[in-house]
Length: 110
Length: 110
Image (cartoon, rainbow over all chains, first blue to last red; front, top):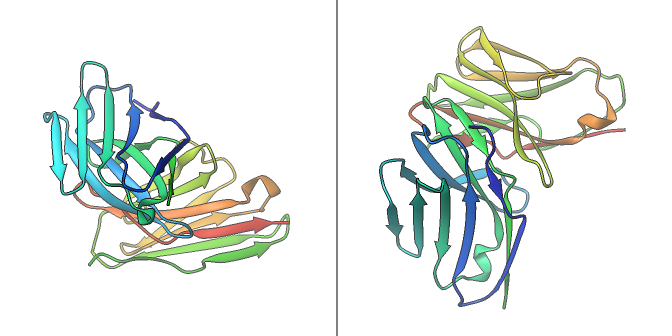
């Protein structure tokens, strides 16, 4: 369960939707997370999903989990320039073993 | 709010110097972590600790050691810094699954 993969870059126009994808390898993960890192800062939790859920919606954010394909996605509706950041997906086992993807740098063009 | 504080935001050291990176959390968390972040590689776990005086190696422990003498403090030590240890170092803590991060310490080894 240590291979979490993400594409490195995504560029969208302000107002469009952004979809950031992530694949993971171990189906025994208990939680899957999305973290956001703004320039010069640490990571902040954006949202998470339990492994027994398929979808979670939180305002402009929608998380989709396809357990069969081990695929996680984060959709940001009406993307704003303030959403420009690096987004990391992560899986966790036993509440203390976290594995992170390489991060996707989202660039939002005005 | 949980606060994870890293003592130094920016450090510049010379090859061979001993380096201490300090991290303090204020929420009585059992688990603390040190990650290294490099572009395109995401976060890689160096060491973690699940209790005072307890530690476990992560994925890249070589060249590093840690100390957890008090529950709130987790220190990362580079016994003899090398140029390939130039990186961003992130400390984190958790109790129930959400990982809280510090702002990061950017270390440059000349």
